[in-house]
Length: 331
Image 1 (cartoon, rainbow, N blue to C red):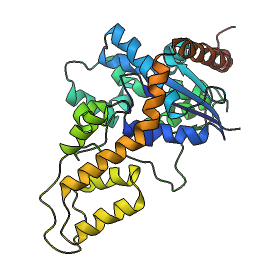
Image 2 (image 1 turned 30 degrees about the vertical axis):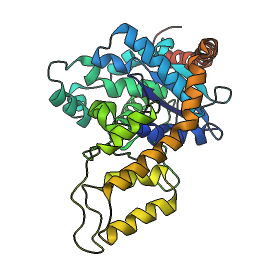
Image 3 (image 1 turned 45 degrees about the vertical axis):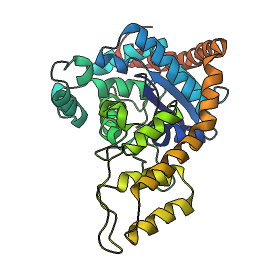
Image 4 (image 1 turned 90 degrees about the vertical axis):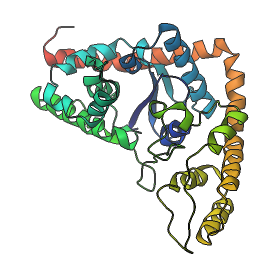
């Protein structure tokens, strides 16, 4: 059975972008693959979070993993920082990663532009830690968004380099797991300028735990244009984000109704936003019920993390033992 590894940074709550971009894939894969899903708390250190906030956000990600339907009885759920083999493998891989190639990573250059006062070594070597996360379990498949494809390509490069240098085929090359239609889902933000994500601003993201009143307020403030002026005009780029969100959470007849209204130049964006907000609320309702129940079940959360760390360390320990032997370190 092929192994799958993927994780979400513990920088707070999950949003619709996380759900449709990763978690929904997790739900299908956990019954067909050997899956390791982790809370990436080490990765969040690149932004220097407060220790109390880091602990709380890690707990929240775990709650929302479970609320969405990830089943710890068939998939391994763990916290990155509970697996000491990961930072050791990360350190060893860094010896085969070169500054020049890391500096050319698009996401690193973007972070340098956005946060020039916090260009730390963790940001630079993010792809190396991501590689360690994947190959610690010798995974073949990784559910990732479009923005992570370059990191996964680098992971393959590091694997190839390691295997070639130590004359082994121990590590398989990891590839992105794709939906059945071959496309990775990129969920747009409410401002229409890019993907939904915390780094782009909380106002343009719908979080799984957002109250209905918050969802309505955010959606009603979503960016639109002045509307079409010619019949059968193709959707303008300034409004496609709302229709993309509508397609994710609304019934097909609802989507068709607003597409037809747009085509006939009689669309009312206020009505579209109201419908979208109510459909998001309805979509999230069962997840939010589970979130509230899990928030009060601390014993279950601790048990999931304990069991996940134990199972994950068995796999990670085996991998690291072989790596150390290949690199010339005695057991």
